[in-house]
Amino acid sequence: MAKLTGYIIALVGLVIVVLSLNLGRLNITLPAAIKSSYVMILGLVLIIVGVFLSLNKGKSTQAAEEVPIYHGNKIVGYRRQK
Image (tube, rainbow, N blue to C red):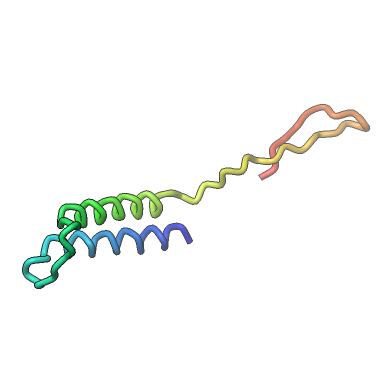
């Protein structure tokens, strides 16, 4: 699920970057407080975040659980259970 979300975020960022480059040609006007360079930076940040999410292999942050190894009633060691 994280990969799909990453792809969508990266695609939205790419669309924002392309739109920020073509604002004049498309007759799109932004409010005076927002510059086209800010829109470009927002798009680039979205692309970076999307690529990071899509390349992340979904590693679990939970460590492998250790279970005891018994010999009779005595614990002789531990092993990791996947």
